[in-house]
Image 1 (tube, rainbow, N blue to C red):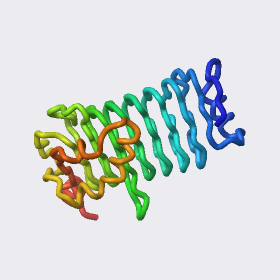
Image 2: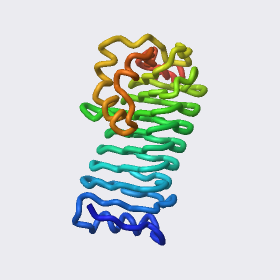
Image 3: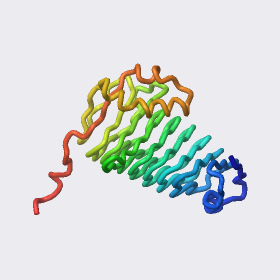
Image 4: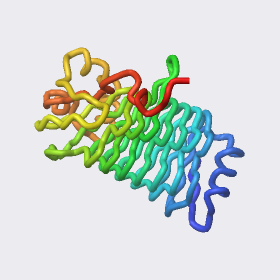
Length: 239
């Protein structure tokens, strides 16, 4: 592993180092909001100690970005592949338009996480949120999987207007209180097959946060899915 101090470096400087460094395992200390870290990365492991700035991990196509701290907005924007692990909190629009890969957030996330997530074939993005989510979670979601672990057991960990315009994919939330059905989405209780689908992702989350798998999956879980295949049909005229 090769370590660099990010003091005095811009986001561009950090990415230049990532591209030219022959070591596949790189750590940057003292990161303080530099943007675009590891954008379009394909095959390395980059560890950030501090605060990852806006749009870090955007367009990632592989590799792993580990943030030991918090992250700002638009983390994993239009991500294609790879993994992002954030031990702390994350700002707005995490996983915006994700098309593949996995994002794990140890604590809370801001507004519009998972907006416009989509999937195609075997490319299925996954966003795991350890704490609570801000308003408009899964807005216009067209595919992929969002899991809200809700480690602190908050009664309503989803904020307002979640799943607005949702027409694909799935949101899973762990809470004792059944979420309300909103807009074009429906809510049902999770079954054993649903939990089996989550197992590998919950395992990774537990490894990140030192949580116990059984403590998570033994709680009540709810599935939020699109109520129909074409929620916009009535908005347009036939032509």
